[in-house]
Image (cartoon, rainbow, N blue to C red; front, side):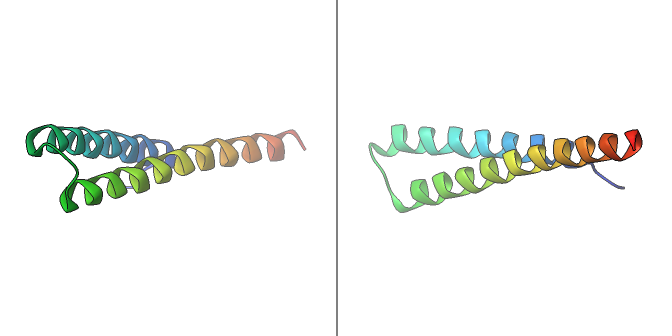
Length: 71
């Protein structure tokens, strides 16, 4: 099954939000920042960054395809 970059981008952003939620819960239950919390924040950062990049790539490809149709 072929997935579009737009769908994958939203999926990555959703995973980043979930990891952020788990990191916040971990901070509140453990009363501070631990090793696992830092790992969750790093994973959330990578996922959100990848999601934004994939969504931007989707619109770049779409814009490029429309530009080629007009020629």
